[in-house]
Length: 353
Image (cartoon, rainbow, N blue to C red; front, side, top):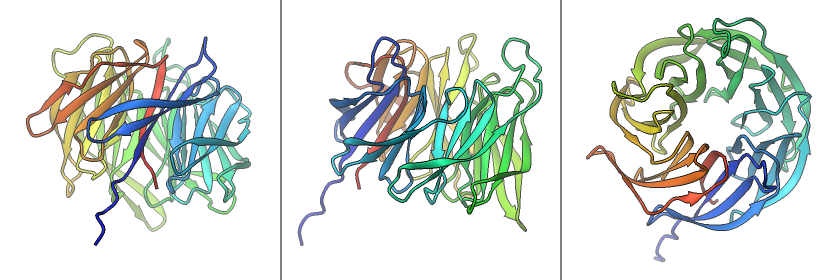
C-alpha cells in the first residue's frame, strides 16, 4: 500500500493597507516547523476580516467597498470572483452559513447586519437582508450605540448570532434558508459594560463561548433548539487574563482547536494569549496558561491542527509572531524571528483539499 499523502497547508493573512495596496498575503506553511514562507499577495483595500467557506473552496474578505469573493486553487492561490457593496460602512467580520448559501457581514461602525446570497460557484449574488440594531448603551465614549462585532451561525445552521459590544448582548436571529431573511428569536444578555466581542461554538454545537472585551471574560453557554426555539443557558464565566495583567486590557480573538478539546484567546493591552482545556461533556473550561506573545495588540491567532504551533498577528506592532506550544507543560516558547505584516487583522491556517 502506498504511503498516505501528507496534507498541505497554507496561511492567509489580512491587514489594513493604508500606505500599501495589497491587504491579503498568502504563505506556504511548514507543519513540521510551524513557520511560513511568503508566496504572493492580493490587491485589496483594508481587509478587516477574512473567512473561508465551510467547503474550503472559497475565501471572502471585508474591504472598503463591501465584500470580495475569491476561489481557492488546489495550491491555495486566490483567483478573484467578484465583489458586492453592502449599503453601509466597512464591515469588521464576515462568515458563511454551514451550507455556504449565504454570507454574513457584521457592521461595527453602523451597527448593521447584512446578509448576501451566494451562487454555487462561490461568487456573491445579491443582498437579501439588512438589519440595523438600535438602542443606547451605558458608556459615553465606547458603548453608547450599537456596534456589531461578529456574526456566526449555530452549528445546526438554524440561527445567526450577532454580538453587539455597544448593547452588551448577542442577538439570535432565525434564518430563512429560502430567502435569507432574519427574524429575531432570542437575545443573550451579557453583563453591563462587558462588551461581547466574538462567539464560537463547540464542534458538536452544544456549547457557545462568548468573549467579552471590557471585562476580559469568556461566558460559556449550553445551547439546544427546543421545538423551533433557541435556548441558551450560561453555565460558566472564566477570566481571560492573570490577576496581575496590564491595564487597559481587552479580550479579543477566540478560537477553538481542530479537535475541539481546547479554546484559545488573545488579550490586547496585556498582549498575551490564554489557553483553556475544554471538557467535551460539560463544555466547561479550565485555564492552562496566560503568556505573552511578544507583539502589540494580538488581533487574531491561528493554531496548528496538532496544537503544537501558534501564530499571532499583531496589529499595532505590524508583526506575525511564532510559538511552539506544549499544553501539558503549560508553555509557549518563541519559534524563530517575527514576520513583518502591516497592521494585521486576521490570520488563518488552511488545509488544502
